[in-house]
Length: 269
Image 1 (tube, rainbow, N blue to C red):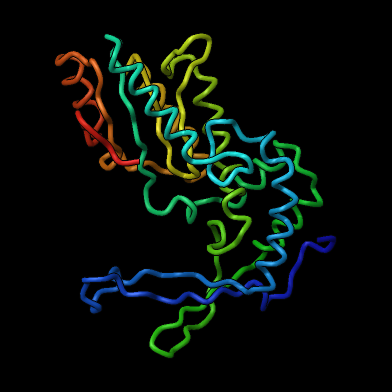
Image 2 (cartoon, rainbow, N blue to C red; image 1 turned 90 degrees about the vertical axis):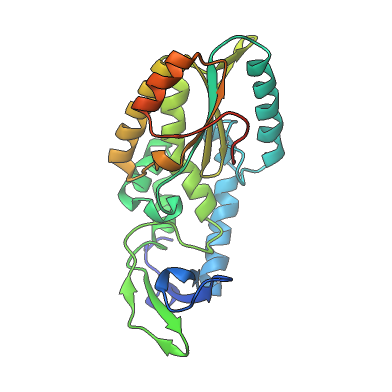
């Protein structure tokens, strides 16, 4: 950790391809790439993961439950069901929005942005150096039908199969979560003194919103700003919106402005 460098052979990943069931093997997109990293590297990053886990709960908001110690996915599921009940039993216009990240969210992580986020969270520089020793000149080779490709550099994304990746992604996503929580223009569902806007697990983002038009416009601005910094992108055409108590004229205007997959009965999360 002191040097900030690891042996190059530790940083090389082997990418194997698994055929997708029922798909013709003549097309590249019908294979699923799986990146396999060195076992020694996994041991090293597991040590880092255990250390980061000691403080991660103080850095990440309670609405992020993905692989955060002491938190579980069913916590958000139960809360979401309760919020749907609150929304549908009232006359307040609102919606449940399930954001769909464009391509693979973990693969889009920008290392420079990740470094800045860790610094803003006051994570000790020595620890950050230890983390980025895993991201200093990593390479990968593709193995297919007994053949090995030449090694090529990896320039972005968290390492697949690395124990540390899930916590790093939670850190990278937290600035977006904070922007949404702190925005008075993104209106959530109010239950007593609390306002509920977000359910996160870990890259699945689900929002519970009221005042749909103004909330969506403010959310779109936040996503655009965050995307410029982090390279995170949302696929709006695959983003699902579950409606509640929205008048027809308002819904028509929303559909013209936002190309979501509009739902009236259920959505995928």
